Amino acid sequence: YSVEKAAIATQEADYNSLSARRLGARVAKEVAADQIRQKDNTLGNIAWLVMVVSERADLRNWTLLPETVQIIRIKPSKGSVISAVGLNRFDAESEKFQDIVLNENENKRFFIIRSIR
Image (cartoon, rainbow, N blue to C red; front, side, top):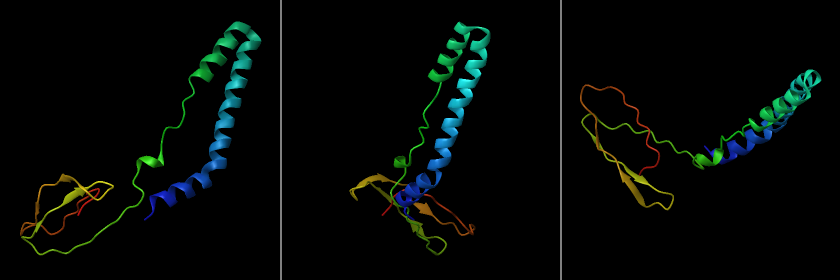
């Protein structure tokens, strides 16, 4: 699964919607400030300033995710020991995980490990 391709497709699909929402929010703030300004010019200007300054950027970012995701499904026998080693982007060992021992009385187990060898 390519996270990079999904990020690009999602951004392209949502671009118009995101732009329309930002524009709508800005117009709503302008209208609200103008309504206040009609009663008190100074208070309306202060309200406009507070609303504009309080805007926050959307800081969600696809670059925080890995470029790809790989999944492996194995069917080890009960009593098997599974060893996993974490890898960095240069395929060098970055962390060692505790061995996973499959006990006789356990039917299913699911493990999420971000990058292993």
